[in-house]
Length: 180
Image (cartoon, rainbow, N blue to C red; front, side):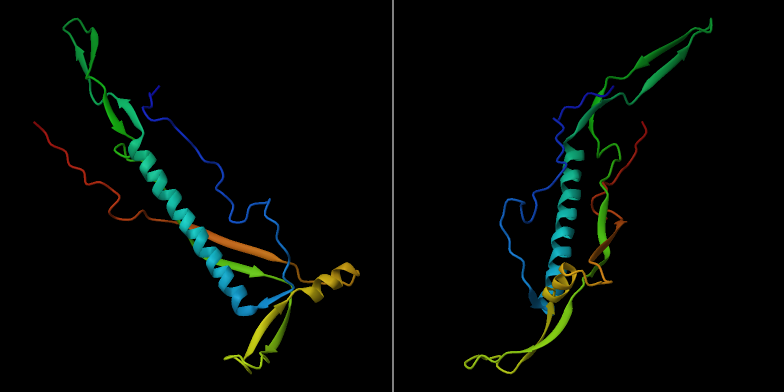
């Protein structure tokens, strides 16, 4: 059984972006552009966490050492008796043994939300954007329809697809073997 020289620590869950104890209020409408931007930022934040987790795993593999016997010499004498002689154990990292972290990337993300789309115009008198039209997503009417029992066929849905990707090229150490 290998002896680990680094204390193994595993984080099962990461700190949430919005902790459960934080009070939040529902926004009945939002600019459609902001909705798309928030989705993109959410995917980017999640990708960053995935990349950090892979980097942390790389560091942990490099720091976790095991004792490994690299050579066992088998000798058979004239009487057919077999004896073994082990080389002294060497301390090697899991990375040196060839273990690599897995890297992932999002290949696609989809959000489907039941909402009404409205075109709104900025009517603020002293605004640089006066007269600008903006597309807004409004969920208030859909929620009201659900509360009074009106059938709403669309449902909210979030889908994200992640795929493993090759490790960055410079992570793999160069290897060479010499014979004496």
